[in-house]
Length: 84
Image (cartoon, rainbow, N blue to C red; front, side, top):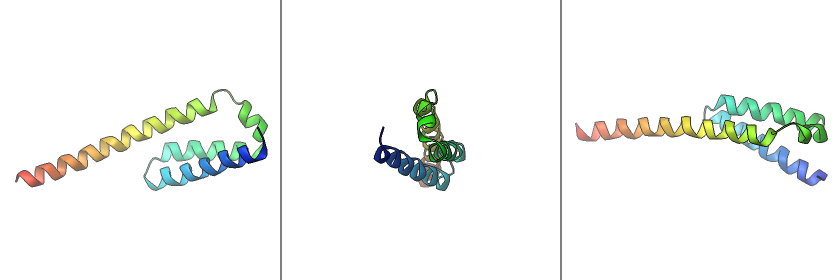
């Protein structure tokens, strides 16, 4: 992998870290921060980490599930208000 690919990984990790933190998905944000640090320290070693992208996807899926549950609560609250 060349430097441009590493730069892209860092960009996306940094963006996902900030976005997830803003949305309250702190576990995902922390995971992204750890990966970002690892890629900044030693990109080749970070790439060699076992299943780093699978672990990131798992964290992302868990965060999406939690956010979807919060949206469902908001929708239910709105529906309850509308029926009163």
